[in-house]
Length: 283
Image (cartoon, helix red, strand yellow):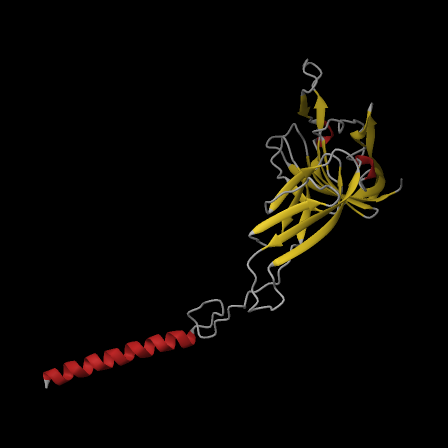
């Protein structure tokens, strides 16, 4: 009798194990898992595309702010411009149309342009085809984008704007961003920013470190010349005009500056105030 019980228990356990395995597979509903009964090898299939992004990098120095990559089809002279494939390929071929010697073969490339120009950038991507998911998929695609390189003065940020801060919306004032050609270097400019924040008579936004520039966005950091230092590049962050730092962005004829000031340098700990200026182009 005892042997019959052992045999029964063994058979029952075996049947239960089979049922558990079966139930587990039936309950698996992950279409990406080959172990599941509803597995679909084409579930995540995406048609082959060599489309890519173009981003102008704004490098932030001497501050804790992070670098910014701005998607664009227009950039300014001297910017680092990144071209990045949106999909992964086994082989990448980058070309600039009209330049037979130019070729790059990584997923991302970085270029720098020394003068104004118009160009067509092309990417050819190749990977294993998946005809079982798409009979027209040969694993190869070609995509071309147009890029325009302009001088600083052609940025929509350059000009004079009238607006107000969100802290005092009824008080209107003008700000002006200028790009002045360097003597003998018509493609390079000195940037100046005046009357910002409102009533700041100083014009210390003149050093290259003070206005970090891309086509549609810039970073402001207030510097002044350290006169007692013989080094002509000796600049320090100033404590007058409440040491404004922030971002200026252009959209059409409108600009927005999100910035931060120090309420009072004589009070410790320092209190930082967030402000926003919105303005409309008047010149």
